[in-house]
Amino acid sequence: MNEELEFLDLGNIDLEEVYRKIGKFHFPVVTVGDNVLYFNKYLFKHFGDMNYIRFYTSPEYIILEPLSEKKMNSFAVHRRDDYGYGNTIIPAELKEKKLAKGFYKAYKCSKGIAFKRYEPITEEAS
Image (cartoon, rainbow, N blue to C red; front, side, top):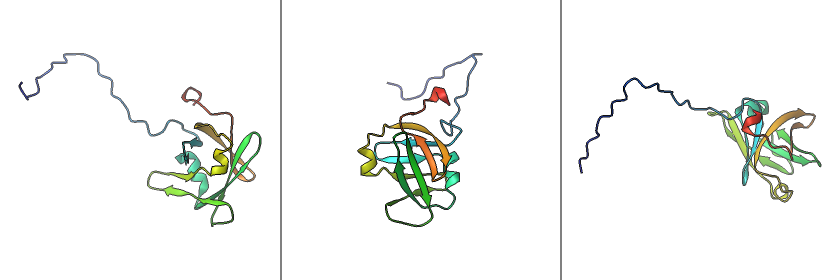
């Protein structure tokens, strides 16, 4: 078998470049994974220098309260400032509430940031 690459003449066919997407959504989004919540760059810029987060729930919403210092029932936010995003673990108690994996649009609220717990978004909605 010949190990050299054979030349393929593409002629005058039209080529379409495949672009690298920086993110799926161009607005603030929380991504719920198996064990981690991710905050995209559009949401994470609202965290400022906050390094901890506290969670609250209601029948319709998950609320995230960004904190500048560790407090009772707070969780560390792992910052990726070089990429502009952050993440934190999903607390066991929140997992017990059957939070579905997916993407959720984030909203500003009086406590900090909220997302609708039963309304994941799809790429078609972006």
